[in-house]
Image 1 (tube, rainbow, N blue to C red):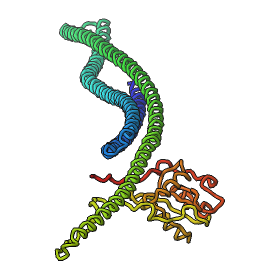
Image 2: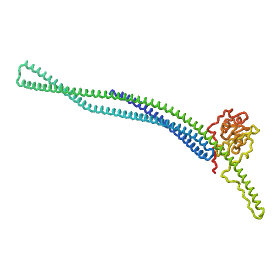
Image 3: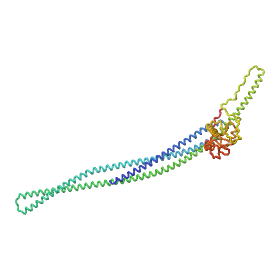
Image 4: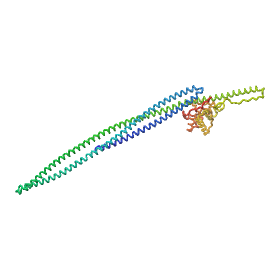
Length: 514
C-alpha cells in the first residue's frame, strides 16, 4: 500500500515528540522537587525562629517573675511590656511570613496541578499510540483477510479461465479437423459428381457421414457460444472484484487522510499545551524565585531586628537586674555589719549589767552568752568595697586591668575571663582582675570610662578603657594584640567592629529569698 511509509514516518515523529514531552515532564518534576526542598528548608528555619522566640519569651517570663519581688518592678515591667510589644510586632512579621509561605504552598499546588496535566497528556499520548497500533493491526488483518478472500476467487476464476482456454483449444482443434474432413469430403463429392455414379450405397454412406459432421459442427458451435458466455461472465466478475478492491483502497486512503489530520490536530494541541505549560512554569519559577528572595530578605531583616532589639532590651534588663542585685548585696552587707555592731553593743551592755547585778553574789555562776554571729542567712554575700584596695588609676600607663563580676553564674563570662588571662600570660603581660561586684568605686569608674558598652569582661589599660572581649579576640586573631594594648593604638584605630549579638551581659543569679 502507498500509506505504509507515511505511517512509519508519523510514528517516528510521535515517538520523538513523546520522548521530548517525557524529558519536559521530568524537568518539571525535578523543579517541583527542588521547590519542595526549598519550602521544607524555609519551614524548618521558620520553626527554629519560632523556637528561639518561645525560648526568649520563657526567659522573659522568668525574668518577669524574678523582677516582681524587687522594688523596681514597675519600671522593669514597663520595659518588659515594650519588649512584649516588640515581640508582638515580630509575631505579626512571622504571621506575614506564614502568609507568604501559604502563597508558596498555593504556587506549589498549581505546579503540581500542571504536573498532573502533563501526566494526563502523557497518558493521552499513550492511548493514542495504542489506538494507532490497534488501527495498524486492524489494517493488516483487513488486508490479510481481503487477500485470503480474494485469492480463492481469483484462483477459481483463473482455473476456470484456464479450463475454458483448454476446452476452447480442444474444440478449435476438433473444428479444424472436422473442417478439414468436410473439405476432403466436399472435394471427393465434387470429384464423384464429375465421375459417373458407381453405386447408391456409397453415396448414402457419404451423406450420412456429412450429416454427422454437420451435427458435430453445430454442437461445437453451441459449445463455443457457451464458452464465450462464460468468458463474459468471468470478465464481469473480475471487473466487479477490481471495483470492490478500488473502493476498499479509496476507503483506506480516506481513513489514512483522516488519521493524518487527527494526528496533526493532536500534535498541534500538544504543542500548544507544552508551550503554555512551559510559559506557566517559567512564570511560576520567576515568581517563586522572587518570593524566595523576598522571604530571605525579610527573614534576614527580621532576624537582625530581633537580635538587635530583643537582645538589647534583654541585655539592658539583665544589666539593671544585675546592678540592682549588686547594690542589694552591698546593702545587705552594710546591714549585716550594722546589725553585728548593734548586737556587740547589746552584748557589752548585758554583760556590764550582769556584772553589776552579780557583784554582791559573786559565788553565783553566771553563764556567758554564746556568740551567735548575727542572723543566719541562706547566701554568702560579697564583702564591701573596703576589701578591695586596687588602684583604679595606676601610675604605670601599661598596667592592664580586667573588669569582671563574681556574682554572675554565666559560664560564658568565666570562659571569656580565662581566655583573656591565658592570652595575657602567654604574651607575658602583667595584669590585675578587678571585681565590680565587690567594689562600687570600680563599677562607677568602669561606667565613667565606658558609657556605651556594658558587656563584661572589659579591658582597661593605665586606668582608661581599652576594649571589650570581642575586640580583644578580633585583635588576637588578626595578630594585632600587642598593637591594641600599646599606649597609642586603640580599637577604633585598628578598625575593629565587634559583633553586637555576642556582647550580652551574663545571666544573673537568682535573688535571695527572705
